[in-house]
Image 1 (cartoon, rainbow, N blue to C red):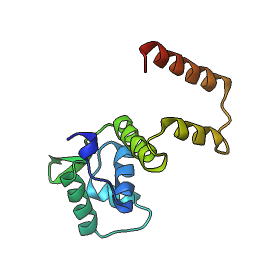
Image 2 (cartoon, rainbow, N blue to C red):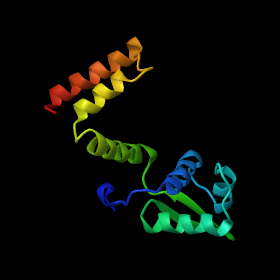
Image 3 (cartoon, one colour):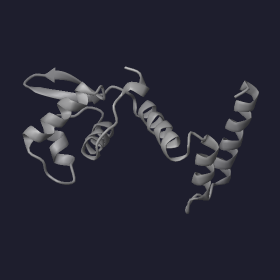
Image 4 (cartoon, helix red, strand yellow):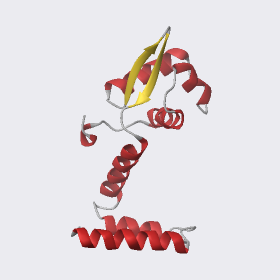
Length: 129
């Protein structure tokens, strides 16, 4: 399933996906244990099933229990989420998003980070992007 066709997540689904990404592979009991507010076993299992149906999770059986893992790597998922934020809140303008990030409090960049960003920009120029 391509990133653009993966349905968006509800607040609760996002909480569960955050747990899955943090632990790489989880059982329903693991999810319940790490949620900030407690849900019933059946509620957690229902949401995990929905996340599988939406294409966010894959499932495998390990003895008597089921384990859930993300379909996309954390890097791919974060890039997809960032693309969504840029499209939704910055009218698809990467420039506006970058400026907003730099204008945020605590966005003081270390010399190392400034150098890395400069190198990435120069690399993109050479690639014609």
